[in-house]
Picture (cartoon, rainbow, N blue to C red):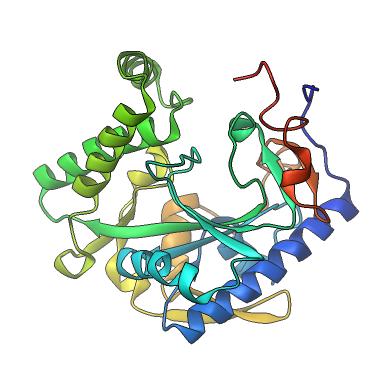
Amino acid sequence: MKPEKTVNFSKDELRNLQLKNLEMLLYFKNFCDENNLTFYFCGGCCIGAVRHGGFIPWDDDVDVFMKREDYEKLGELWNKKADTEKYSYCRPSEAKNYRNLFATINDNNTTFIKTHQASLDINHGLVLDILPLDGYPNSKLKRANQIFWALVYSLFCAEMVPENHGKLVKAIGKVGLMLFRASKTRYKIWSFAEKKMKQYKISDCDNITELCSGPFYMMKKYPKSAFDKPVYKNFEGYEMPLPCGYDTYLKTAFGEYLKLPPKEKRVPHHDVVFCDLNNSYKKYKGKYYCVEGEK
């Protein structure tokens, strides 16, 4: 059965989705606190904490930043110490590519199938996105080198041609994916690119950047001081960490973030094939994902 359209959430359904996300977030925060790992709200959650004291009313997920060192530590610790029966740590690897550029924590007992992943035999549980922060090299030449490898990483890890970034970028992306079709070859390319792009340590740089959020955000430069430490703000009744320089970060990334967007843009931003917050995604293999005859 091929899903013909994406899910349109009602107000109540979206709120239930947010509360399920909150449940996962609280577990994640407790895990990080117990293991001396620091994270910061970013994107919609950061705006939501400042502007709404909780989720943006139309937001459908949780996004956090972690500095590269803690980001890597999280991957080492999760399978040793976390409740992996309930929550899985998922990150692109040679064995399995999720078409994400970053790690996620997935709720194994739920279903949240995104359109760009519907052909993949992966964990389709509800996700918490974890985006690494890397050093922004002081040298213009090194920065150009970093951007080059970040673009290569994005192309071959996501395995999708970049949209909305100009005809030249789109054309180069198409050619690249046509030339290198084998999964093993693509893995070798993106894993090498990842090593090259993340080689600049935050401690050696004056600024910070995000390289795993797509071409638009990888061009951003944030002062390192904005992420010196977390500050805490109310989010759905809980104190959650934001970058100490959250205003600088949000203005750089989003502009006038305190202003509400036009009504037509107040909608969830993920295209979702199917959602079930009460049953594991495994129940729906062959029906809503990995459907026979689809790629």
